[in-house]
Image 1 (tube, rainbow, N blue to C red):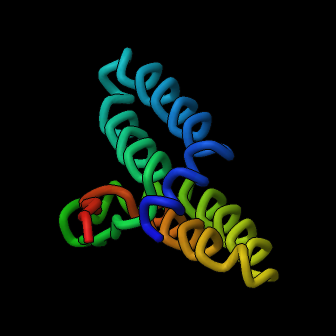
Image 2 (tube, one colour):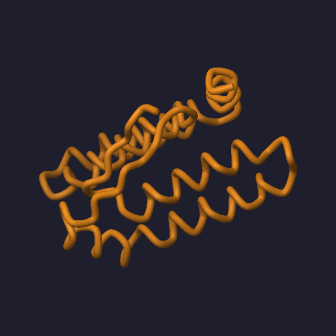
Image 3 (tube, helix red, strand yellow):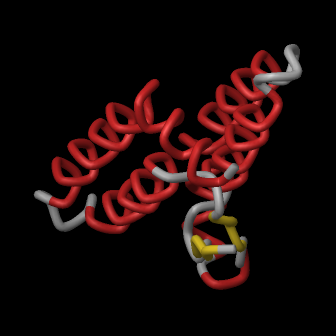
Amino acid sequence: MKILGNIIWFIFGGFFAALIWIILGVLLCISVIGIPIGLQFFKFAQLVIWPFGNDVIINFDKHPILNILWIIFLGWETALGYIIIGALFCVTIIGIPFGLQWFKLSKLALIPFGATIRST
């Protein structure tokens, strides 16, 4: 199921979403100030290209100030968007596995600094 889910995800938007996250990450890494945020965008790209079979481990205590700033300025909006998309996918039985992946992305979107992506 994991391989089939990743293939379907990749074909129907995972590739383009990862490409957007990578482009934004590269643009942010051009400036010295944007490097920490750009590196987090690369985490998003890694998870959004193959979400099935990966899990997000949150470690808020590793960078608490950066996580608080992220939540205030960018995180809660992104996480809320991913939660809404996940809820829309969970309306149908076929969409539930994909909705759960969107919820996983929302966890990373809320607290990315110190978070790691682990293969299950």
